[in-house]
Amino acid sequence: MAPSAAARMPAAPGRADRLLAWFATQRRPLPWRADPDPYRIWVAEVLLQQTRVAAVVPRFTSFVRRFPSVGALARATESAVLKEWEGAGYYARARHLHAAAREIVAHRSGHLPRIAAELAELPGFGPYISAAVASLAFGEPVVALEANGIRVASRWTLEEGDVRRPAVRTRLQHALELELPRHRAGAFNEALMELGETVCLPRHPRCSSCPVAADCRARQELPDPGSVPAPRRPRARPHVLAAIVALARGDRWLVRRRPSKGLLGGLWEFPGGRVEPQEAFEAAAARELREETGVSARGLRPLGVVEHTYSHFSVTLHVFLGEWDGVGRAVGDAPLRWVTRDEFDRLARPAATVRAMALVDRPTGEASRGSGRRPGRRAPSNRGARARPGPRARRAHTTASPTRPRARR
Ligand code: ADE
Image 1: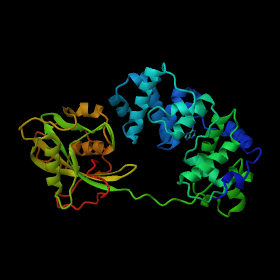
Image 2: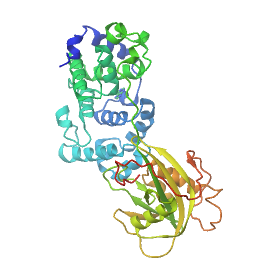
Image 3: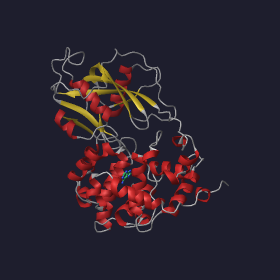
Image 4: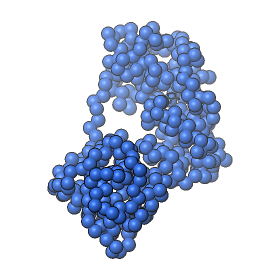
């Protein structure tokens, strides 16, 4: 077995003190730091898991204004929470946040548990969030290890293993546990992350500004401290090719709620789905509309194409406009609604659906030509900046991942 990182570099006396002294003067004035209430810390940490601090600040501010307490979040509907989360991605996190708030109100008198082991029993509380909330909000002496801490600790200890391996993470965790000041665990964890975000950067660490450079093995022993940890190979993202239909009935549009669990769970979108190998886009759109809703369009017109990249996959959506043919009722295995344009805006939607709607909204061009009855025309919008007018329907090849069984977008 490889020697533990801790064995290879015993905790440097004073390293934690120097880090904490640096943090005391250099910490950024972030909104969840001004009022370190456990609920706010929890919301911030969930948001910080998925994006950069700069992007989290406005989202956090808006979220806690809308849901200022555990009680307010628990009282909200899941739809309201998803709408607030719209565009942030990782919607399961929003659903878990909401479910955990309800559990805390129902079974814990509205108070978050104070230790990581108990927090970990709540929905959405993995090892990182549990340790972060327990240490930052309640001072429990536990290490909260996320990507920044992993990078910093790898450099301090000159970790050679692959940091994606659980055994390597455990090693780094143990190395940090030896340094953790028992009465300042929250500040230590936060300082480590802050150092990773502002100084110990992934490729070009700013070692000359680092308060603990003298105690860092990567800095002391390598020509390029940024080479640790070894950069990971970019993940291959599956690509999904799909066709969707904006189906109009008077001034209403047919929309479908995705199943609550799974990808983009609980969000509302136009009916549609994957294009099968060798299937024409228009045929795929008509088939998906029929399969998902039981109704059909009088005809379908290509509106354009939306390209969107989510965290785990990318999608090309071929967007069609159609008018209900007046036959039958819309029924499917998921909730369906005929909504006005304004009602649609109030529902939580995947980013690609928002872009598809922008194609429908376009006042000129292919989408608007020849459709005197097209409902819900709006002022020009540039929200579809990444949407482009599409080719005429043609035969498609699909690059959809063979490992994904007909997943919806
Ligand atoms: N990244 C995750 N949590 C953080 C925090 N509390 N402060 C700074 N960066 C973070």
